[in-house]
Length: 166
Image (cartoon, rainbow, N blue to C red; front, side, top):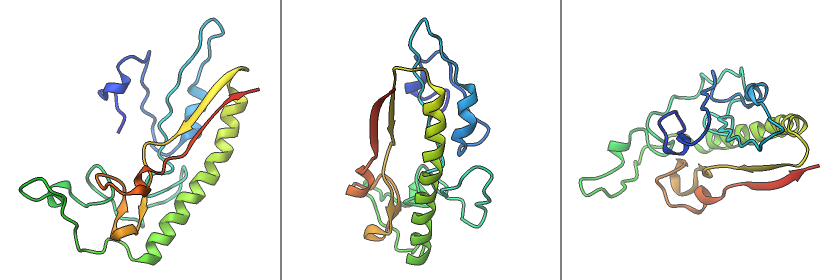
């Protein structure tokens, strides 16, 4: 989670928390570029995070998942007295819901493709763009949903794209 107190934010000129966590398009007008020096922006987007919603989309049909990730409802219920992970036997979503959530995430990525094009049109020539994510997602593998602290290959499948514009 990025916020003004997260260590990675300490050396940026500024930190802006957007009104909605899942509206990358709203970040674009806030970006300013100085021709006298390079700019560096870290855009943390939320469209691809549970509940995989595009801006303005009603996602109230999906339960609010408390905790730092989607694997467990509460972290203290997921760890035994020795600190070992304990898998909750409660089925959080059935396979049909997991499939629906996976399609929702794919749909948000398709939506973001258009927003990335707007970003590419906005930045100055000779700009380098890096697009990546912080984790992958589980959609029912080994009975889990979400990400971390599970050490599963799917959590480490992270997209990465780098290139120079024009």
